[in-house]
Amino acid sequence: MGPGPSDVHSRVLAAMARPTIGHLDPAFVEMMEEIKDMLRYAFRTENELTIPVSGPGSVGMESCFVNLIEPGDTVIVCQNGAFGGRMKENVERVGAMPVMVEDDWGKAVDLQKAADALKANPGAKAVAFVHAETSTGVQSDAAALCALAAEHNALSIVDCVTSLGGTPVLTDEWGADAVYSGSQKCLSCMPGISPLTISARAAEVVRSRNKKGQSWFMDLTLVMGYWGEGASRVYHHTAPINPLYGLHESLVILQEEGIEAAWARHAAMHRALRAGVEAMGLEFLVAEDARLPQLNTICVPEDVDEAAVRSFLLSRYDLEVGAGLGALAGKVWRVGLMGHSARAENVFLFLTAMEDALSRQGTKIEAGAALPAAQAALG
Ligand SMILES: Cc1ncc(COP(=O)(O)O)c(C=O)c1O
Image (cartoon, rainbow, N blue to C red; front, side):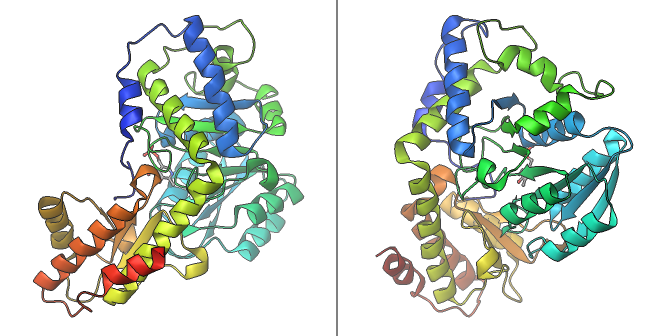
């Protein structure tokens, strides 16, 4: 129950144990087409350029910047946590200029500040932001930010590493241009693959670059030679065969459940956790209207040794939760309810374990109130 990786479903583990076949084997090529179709379902898009990038979420992020941004471009980067900072690094390393729109950790991206930055920087090539900030548990208004970018003729680059499969990622409805995610959060697959989707407009930007980008590995014009439509498949790099079996299975599981049902399950598990946490007397960092159901940031009560609580949960209950990052280090716990981890039994285990840990530290909590509250919330 940390901020990812989440629990991997046994069906996904079993799929990854199947024999490794060639990356140009007709059976594998057929599976690639199914993966692309199922990713379109997950991303809610018709984008042709929708693929699983070989590499973790950071490679999906970097693929967007090295393909869409060129040296000298200006990019509006919204930062309200750790991963917006990584976007800034990417922009700088491409040789472009980041214009930062900064908000406090724990707050959503301020739309007015983003609009002001766009007005002050006409000709900005893109607006980049994190939809679901895993470092704080905040969800920003992706629809509004993508619309702002489009109004100013800028591309939108959206980090949905933690949102895909957990809360609505509506690529086409938002009009988003480049959206990337990770396999290890709400898709509950092993870490190491980054689903990516690129709009037709952004694909045209990639194709019509003035100069080759600096990355050979992430050059989408080359990668699409392997992942593209039709019978001709050109070797680019050896695809991670077994992890892709796993991704395929996790997407089959998502389709079986139905994506709306998966979103509803994440919301229901969050409501149960919240009821228990609040009944215990603990508080959330993030205001309710900006809270991610799949990443719950709980404030550490005064005089509690937060690291000792985490190591007690791990050693006594075999339960992992995350620590705060950056400015939030020592101040919060990050409790994931992602994908296959978002189950009632996990909510109950967490509440039981946390109550035990805090009681042992002598913290004043409402003992015995959490579980009944969570059960009542589940109905
Ligand atoms: C919002 C966000 N963006 C990007 C990343 C980077 O993903 P990865 O660690 O898979 O490279 C993460 C990882 O946790 C993340 O939470």
